[in-house]
Length: 104
Image 1 (cartoon, one colour):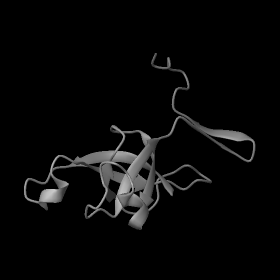
Image 2 (cartoon, helix red, strand yellow):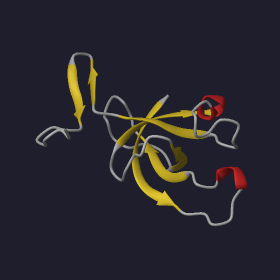
Image 3 (cartoon, rainbow, N blue to C red):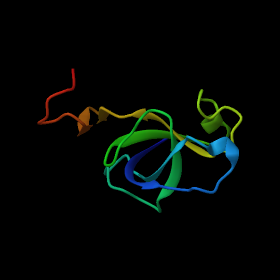
Image 4 (cartoon, rainbow, N blue to C red):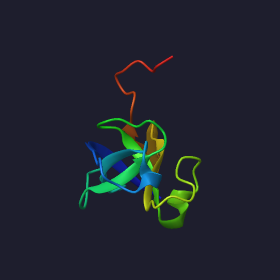
């Protein structure tokens, strides 16, 4: 699993029929120590309703095809969670709702 930040949307009108109705997002991996983006953007299938700027958990390879939406589809990276907070070595390094109201 990797953490990544959603940076955009991919639109593809011509693709495998088995990918129809799946939302494609651009994600950039995050370095867990510094919480900064690292590497090149990747295309991921959104299975959880993620949005621009959110930090997400992604799985690749055969694990990316083990969700209800991606089962037996030609997928190599899936977003499987939206991250609320990350604590590393006793330090809170990310909080989605810091200085914001949590949705009810």
